[in-house]
Amino acid sequence: MHRLDFENLILYDAGRVGISLDVKIQLGNLTANLEAKIDTGAEGCIFERKYGEQIGIEIESGELQNFSTTTNSFNTYGHSVTLITKGFRFDSYVFFAADESFQKNILGRYGWLNRLIVGINDYDGKLYLSRYESE
Image 1 (tube, rainbow, N blue to C red):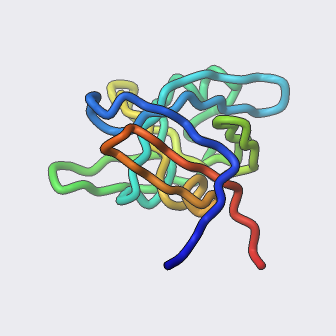
Image 2: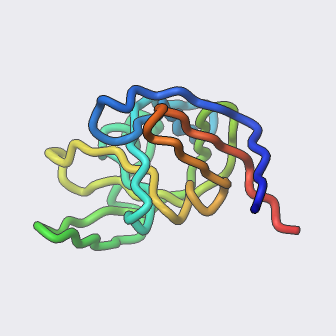
Protein backbone atom coordinates (compact mmCIF):
# COMPACT_ATOMS: atom_id res chain seq x y z
CA MET A 1 0.00 0.00 0.00
CA HIS A 2 1.18 3.53 -0.82
CA ARG A 3 0.09 6.70 0.89
CA LEU A 4 0.08 10.24 -0.47
CA ASP A 5 -0.68 13.40 1.46
CA PHE A 6 -2.19 16.33 -0.41
CA GLU A 7 -2.26 20.02 0.42
CA ASN A 8 -5.59 20.80 -1.29
CA LEU A 9 -8.88 19.05 -1.89
CA ILE A 10 -10.99 20.56 -4.66
CA LEU A 11 -14.55 19.40 -5.16
CA TYR A 12 -15.84 19.43 -8.72
CA ASP A 13 -19.04 18.45 -10.47
CA ALA A 14 -18.43 14.90 -11.75
CA GLY A 15 -21.56 15.26 -13.90
CA ARG A 16 -19.88 17.87 -16.12
CA VAL A 17 -17.67 16.95 -19.03
CA GLY A 18 -14.05 17.00 -17.91
CA ILE A 19 -12.46 18.44 -14.79
CA SER A 20 -12.34 22.24 -14.88
CA LEU A 21 -10.44 24.65 -12.64
CA ASP A 22 -10.37 28.42 -12.30
CA VAL A 23 -6.97 29.68 -13.46
CA LYS A 24 -5.29 33.05 -13.34
CA ILE A 25 -2.57 33.87 -15.87
CA GLN A 26 -0.26 36.70 -14.89
CA LEU A 27 2.45 38.70 -16.62
CA GLY A 28 3.79 41.59 -14.58
CA ASN A 29 0.83 43.37 -13.03
CA LEU A 30 -1.68 42.18 -15.66
CA THR A 31 -3.88 39.14 -15.07
CA ALA A 32 -6.52 37.16 -16.94
CA ASN A 33 -9.01 34.84 -15.28
CA LEU A 34 -10.34 31.79 -17.08
CA GLU A 35 -11.62 28.26 -16.67
CA ALA A 36 -9.42 25.45 -17.99
CA LYS A 37 -9.77 21.69 -18.24
CA ILE A 38 -7.17 19.26 -16.95
CA ASP A 39 -5.91 17.14 -19.85
CA THR A 40 -3.32 14.50 -18.94
CA GLY A 41 -2.87 13.71 -22.64
CA ALA A 42 -1.99 17.26 -23.67
CA GLU A 43 1.73 17.92 -23.91
CA GLY A 44 1.46 21.52 -22.73
CA CYS A 45 -0.84 24.20 -21.41
CA ILE A 46 -2.79 25.79 -24.23
CA PHE A 47 -5.02 28.82 -23.87
CA GLU A 48 -7.23 30.99 -26.01
CA ARG A 49 -5.40 33.83 -27.73
CA LYS A 50 -7.53 36.51 -26.05
CA TYR A 51 -6.14 35.67 -22.60
CA GLY A 52 -2.57 36.26 -23.73
CA GLU A 53 -3.61 39.54 -25.29
CA GLN A 54 -5.35 40.56 -22.05
CA ILE A 55 -2.03 40.38 -20.22
CA GLY A 56 -0.18 42.34 -22.88
CA ILE A 57 1.46 39.56 -24.87
CA GLU A 58 2.10 40.02 -28.58
CA ILE A 59 1.11 36.45 -29.42
CA GLU A 60 3.17 36.02 -32.61
CA SER A 61 6.36 37.20 -30.85
CA GLY A 62 6.53 33.80 -29.10
CA GLU A 63 7.91 30.46 -30.20
CA LEU A 64 5.75 28.89 -32.93
CA GLN A 65 4.56 25.41 -31.95
CA ASN A 66 2.13 23.17 -33.84
CA PHE A 67 -0.06 20.77 -31.86
CA SER A 68 -1.90 17.83 -33.40
CA THR A 69 -4.96 15.98 -32.16
CA THR A 70 -6.75 13.00 -33.66
CA THR A 71 -9.04 15.35 -35.60
CA ASN A 72 -6.93 18.41 -36.50
CA SER A 73 -3.80 20.43 -35.92
CA PHE A 74 -3.34 24.04 -34.91
CA ASN A 75 -0.59 26.59 -34.35
CA THR A 76 0.25 28.21 -31.03
CA TYR A 77 2.91 30.55 -29.71
CA GLY A 78 4.82 29.87 -26.49
CA HIS A 79 5.35 32.45 -23.75
CA SER A 80 6.53 32.51 -20.14
CA VAL A 81 3.84 33.52 -17.64
CA THR A 82 2.84 32.91 -14.03
CA LEU A 83 0.00 30.42 -13.49
CA ILE A 84 -2.12 30.54 -10.36
CA THR A 85 -4.58 27.73 -9.55
CA LYS A 86 -6.16 26.86 -6.22
CA GLY A 87 -3.46 28.55 -4.16
CA PHE A 88 -0.54 27.24 -6.23
CA ARG A 89 1.57 29.81 -8.05
CA PHE A 90 4.45 29.01 -10.40
CA ASP A 91 6.24 30.28 -13.47
CA SER A 92 5.34 28.30 -16.53
CA TYR A 93 5.89 28.17 -20.27
CA VAL A 94 2.47 28.04 -21.95
CA PHE A 95 1.01 28.35 -25.42
CA PHE A 96 -1.61 30.69 -26.83
CA ALA A 97 -3.59 29.71 -29.91
CA ALA A 98 -2.75 31.58 -33.10
CA ASP A 99 -6.36 31.37 -34.31
CA GLU A 100 -8.92 33.58 -32.56
CA SER A 101 -11.61 30.93 -33.13
CA PHE A 102 -9.77 28.42 -30.88
CA GLN A 103 -11.92 28.31 -27.74
CA LYS A 104 -10.35 25.80 -25.37
CA ASN A 105 -8.18 26.23 -22.31
CA ILE A 106 -6.09 23.22 -21.33
CA LEU A 107 -3.88 22.47 -18.35
CA GLY A 108 -1.47 19.91 -19.79
CA ARG A 109 1.59 17.94 -18.79
CA TYR A 110 4.39 20.48 -19.21
CA GLY A 111 3.77 23.69 -17.35
CA TRP A 112 1.07 22.42 -14.98
CA LEU A 113 0.87 18.67 -14.34
CA ASN A 114 4.65 18.41 -14.02
CA ARG A 115 4.54 21.03 -11.25
CA LEU A 116 1.99 19.18 -9.11
CA ILE A 117 1.11 15.81 -7.61
CA VAL A 118 -2.46 15.04 -8.64
CA GLY A 119 -4.97 12.55 -7.28
CA ILE A 120 -8.46 12.09 -8.73
CA ASN A 121 -11.50 10.36 -7.29
CA ASP A 122 -13.87 11.02 -10.17
CA TYR A 123 -16.71 9.00 -8.68
CA ASP A 124 -16.94 11.46 -5.77
CA GLY A 125 -15.81 14.54 -7.75
CA LYS A 126 -12.64 15.03 -5.71
CA LEU A 127 -9.38 16.42 -7.02
CA TYR A 128 -6.34 16.32 -4.73
CA LEU A 129 -3.38 18.63 -5.40
CA SER A 130 0.05 19.16 -3.88
CA ARG A 131 3.06 21.07 -5.11
CA TYR A 132 5.70 18.76 -6.59
CA GLU A 133 9.03 19.12 -4.88
CA SER A 134 11.90 16.89 -5.90
CA GLU A 135 13.41 14.89 -3.07
